[in-house]
Length: 153
Image 1: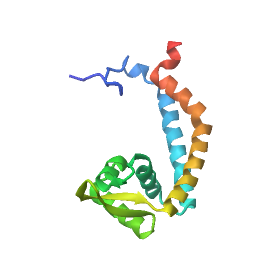
Image 2: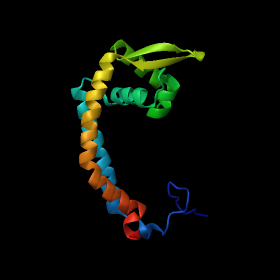
Image 3: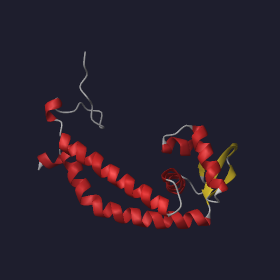
């Protein structure tokens, strides 16, 4: 028995294969890839790899005041814990993060940003927000088509 594909909401997707908007899906993937290429180039210009930039952003954006654990970093970057630990090692060697014991659980280590990484991240985040602002109208249009909002008007 073939099950109907479900939307992100968990409800079955309306219609069958005939109702798939391939053009909008392709445009959405293209927009994401363009943004990722922009982001990788911007990170490179700031002396970071894309993964290092993502790690710094995650530590700053998701971490609490005390920092972010390596396990939580791995979860957010969709990598294995040992990969996140190796990334943390490289960031620490570059002077971009500090490790410190979790004050609530001595078995865990928390990562915090250094002033140098805060400066790099702030500059990168500003140009990323500008890029997102310039892409927003296109993304909103594509997402409206894909979500069916455009046909509900």
